[in-house]
Image 1 (spheres, one colour):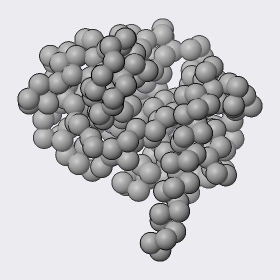
Image 2: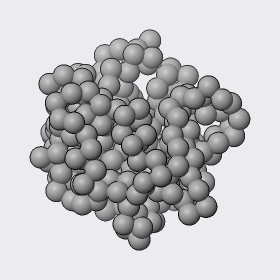
Image 3: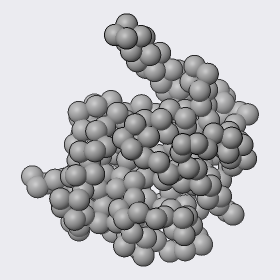
Image 4: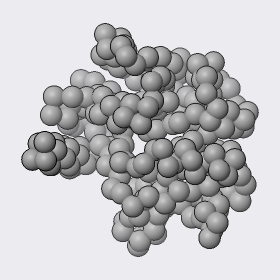
Amino acid sequence: MILCGGKGSRLRPAVNDRPKPMADIHGRPFLRILVDYFAGFGAERFIFCTGYRADAIRDYFTNRQAPLQFVFSEEPIFLGTAGGLRHAQRFIHSDPFLVTNGDSFCPANLAWFYYFHSLRRALMSMIAVKSDDPVDYGSVTFDDGLRFTGFAEKACERGPSHVNAGIYLFSRDLLALIPAGRPWSLEFDLFPKLVHGPGYVLPCNANCIDIGTPERLAAARQYFAAQTATVGVGS
């Protein structure tokens, strides 16, 4: 499941003709980069939780079905990151199911992440990366057993910490914690309920790239240009 229903107001000065996840990265929508990466780990079916300018996402992926399957869950009103998942419940076939933000990319090993989650029989697992400046992200804490112990979205404290990479594995049972038909947030509403519960954090030694502002979009373009150049040299 890819969460791509937000308006992307902060990115509007640079991208004002499409939803944020469809921002152009060297001729490809950012969302296509996410799909290709997840498909590389065997994902075959993608549910897009859409809202703002949903038609742009639907029009692009409808003509690109084979060999992947794309499902569109359009929110009738803004439902937030958790509410969008709950609205799409009827489309979820797997248990657990994988969720990612539509405006960030983390080159994590998803096969290992699935093994990590399954071994612990977790209700929720999230990937976290190190950051020297977590102010604009969700700070994550966990104990020596990697059990989830705390979450603070866009905390004011500065300094090194682990932050939410926006990639999760959820048990279907978790959906029962999300009320239907009204806005609900993973970060502010759901995660606080899971502290010291059956949730786990997998620390990942990787960069997390997001496109939430014009400056970060420019940095993302530089990152993917460098990745393309590296692949080209080695091939």
